[in-house]
Every structure is written in structure tokens, then in C-alpha cells.
Image (cartoon, rainbow, N blue to C red; front, side):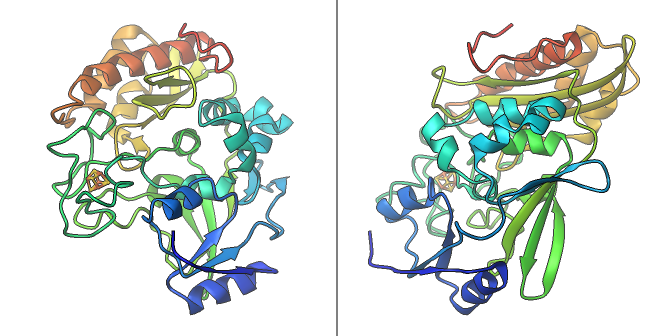
Length: 338
Ligand code: SF4
């Protein structure tokens, strides 16, 4: 770990000014990922800008009937917020599937979006990694790839995005509010994270001099028919091999509106319009769900250690959609897969 300076921003405008003035500075809120990265020498910021006391901790109703979640709302508070539990239970479920209670207490909403991959090679500075050191090579492609991506990969990187919460937010069409020197703008959550391409070192479409101020949930929360199914190597405190956020609006036995997002399979939460088109207007049956899974996985590619994830994803999609259709969402408290 290197020596670094510490400064605290008193408001959003000052935070933007401070980050714009120092490209090697980093914002810190909960620090649940950044501090680890600094200990491992992966991140070497010359300055930490503490944003933990900025007034971004409110959850408020929007005029459009949705919810605006301040970027510094802790993950635990969001998961247990009465309105979120009632109207957006898929978000509560996804958050509770991630990390540990202690980490969820510290981690912020904005920080959850910006957490970095848990590819082991990214954290090992003795080994090549294009994300950590551009053009150094990717150790995972011919290495240990059990946790790695099967969709949207590139020759440069096959890492996955580790968040659970973002998978549910992508399914709901959440929007990210950001602010920078040129003012405020919004980015659709599903466009917030990037595929690796030739520049795996860039995780998101947030500019280096911008700050996340809020995440907005649209009015539609799919509270009746949803499921967040997470498949992992142990039953708690583990990242997803595969996760599925499934949300359905039903008209009798027919699907009126379907949302399907996958975690643990790509460099970003994975949405696929063609797969959702296979669901919309169809009967909510196992056959329909299996067809949608086939469409979503049509370009899936396995590596030495993760080819099993293609079939596992197919089964997880069918199971999550079945749970959603039946109104029997995955329980995060007893972890039983129903
Ligand atoms: Fe680095 Fe990405 Fe390869 Fe992992 S998969 S070693 S993060 S380049």
C-alpha cells in the first residue's frame, strides 16, 4: 500500500472540483472494494476524496411514480427500505444475496455500481492482466476460469461484473444520475457498464471527473411475479457463478411484459431484447422459458474452466422464470432453491 493524501468533500460541487483537479485521486465512500484494491497494490491513488458525508442519503418518491435512491444510501438500508421491499422486492432480494451483512452495512448504492471484478488475476500484481495493466495479457483465458464470463467476452478480457444489485436494477430499467464539470446527465443502468472489448481497464461509461448522485427506479417494480436466483459455490458470502433476475407481468397465464437479466456471465449485467421478445405475448410455460434461454445463450462461449456455465445458465433461467410466474421468489434467508 502506498502513501496517499486524504481530503473530505463538503458538497457535490466540491467533490467534482477535487476529482477533476487530480486524475489519480479516487472517491471513497464505504471503501468495501477500494481499500482491498489498495492493500493489494492494484489501485494506487495519490489522494482519497471522502464523499461519505455528502447529502446523498435520501430515498424519495419521483413525480413519475418511481423512487430516487441517493448514491450514499447503504445497501442494507436500501434492501430493508419499506417501499423497496413492497414495490421493488427483486432489488431487496438481490442485495441480500450479495456479500455479508457487515459489508452491506458499509457499501453504498453508488459504490456497488463501481465495484471491480473479482477475477483473482486482477488482484495478483505478479501476473499479467489487461484490466490492471493494459496490453500485459490475460491470465484467465488459459487459466482458472470457473468464475469467468461466457457472453460478451473479448480476446483481452473474460472477467465478470460482480454485483447482484445491478442485475436487478438492469432488469427494472433503472437509470443512473451523474454529475460532472459540464452539469448533470443520466445513463441507463443497462448502458452504464461496458463490455471489455480492447479496453478492459475501463469498466463503465462514467467519466473520470463525474460522480454518481442517485439511482432512479421506474414506477414499474414487478412486485408480484419476480425472482432473483443466485447460483454460487457456497450458500453465503460468495460471488455468483450465475444469477438471474426474472420479472414478469402476467395477464392470466400469458406474459404481458418480461424482464430477464443475468449476473456472473459477462462484464456487465446481461440483458437481451431478443430473449425477452421470445417471452412477451406467450404462455408462461416451461417450454416458453426454455426457448427464451436458448435465444439468450445463442452466442455463449465457454473457456477451459467454465463451459458448464452455459447449461447451468439455461437451467437457472428456466427455474427463475418459473419461480417468477408462480409467485414463489427465491428465498435469500434460507437459500433453498424452490
Ligand atoms: Fe485481467 Fe480480465 Fe483477464 Fe481477469 S479476465 S486476468 S481481469 S484481463
